[in-house]
Length: 182
Image (cartoon, rainbow, N blue to C red; front, side):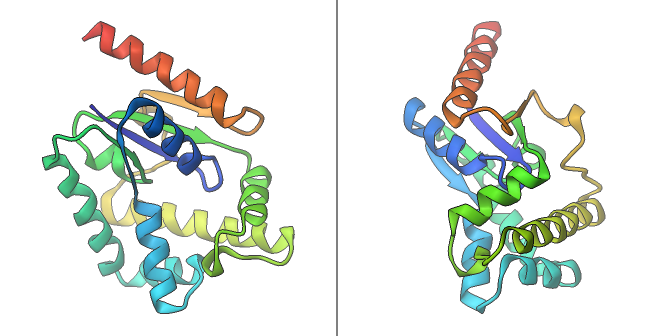
């Protein structure tokens, strides 16, 4: 089984996906890590790389080709990605949501590295809004996909006031039900 975890910026996609992969013995994959690596190689912030990607589709295409190649894998995968729910066949598709302020706060506090480092929460909120809008625009233009469309997912959970452990437990329960129904 492949599990695709999508979500708003700062919603806990990576935290939840890593914890779930460890619990289930699945392999964890993150397209966000791929994007961050490109930003760091180029000495850019994620917002700057997102802006470039709006006019240079080769950035998203390179990541998306790697993502689509995972369809040929027979491994048990948990894929932390904005587009996996749309590119990975027969995946159990999960969307995590979070309030804009909480998502930006998590990113600001996490100090993920030079591509996502902010001195003030206000700067993180502005960067959050810009990057979210850029990603949504790119995916709509390139694929006609609205990553925020509720009907695209098997399970949607709000992580704003819910711990990662509680989210993982809810996902495990939903996976168990899906496997029992098969």
